[in-house]
Length: 176
Image (cartoon, rainbow, N blue to C red):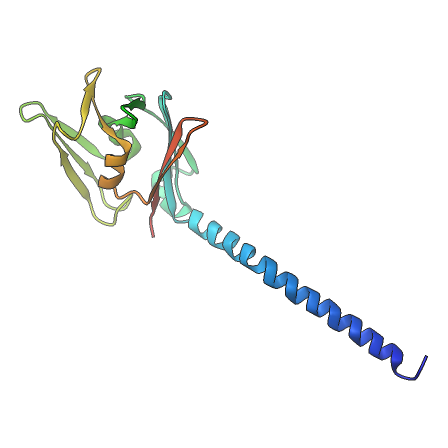
């Protein structure tokens, strides 16, 4: 072995190892970044899980809404109306908004309208107030039901996810 040849071999090995490390970092770094973003998103997401035919909804709150979640990440809420399918649309009882949020739902039998008021700070920075007419909902078993799609638009839902296998759906708000 010539003088300095061993050092050159070790230097070549170190360069190869560094090159491989850089290549692996370039391959896996995007996945790590997505994982961090996903974890950050979970801190700002508020969602409610429903299942067709199930009288219980599950609310998952981000850590910063501790006053609402009562020291729990998941809150089970009994529903007054069980979600169901109607002509291909998922329907939920409007009265359940009182159980899901600290909101007020008022029925006006004379005008056949429903006024809903949701306080600020839960799904919106300002108070959310809307009125539904009889063309916005259907009546079933003396309960007013609205389609999840229409409710999602009104409540400014970021995303609605439906899982066919379990007949479950999730309303997601990004509360940044």
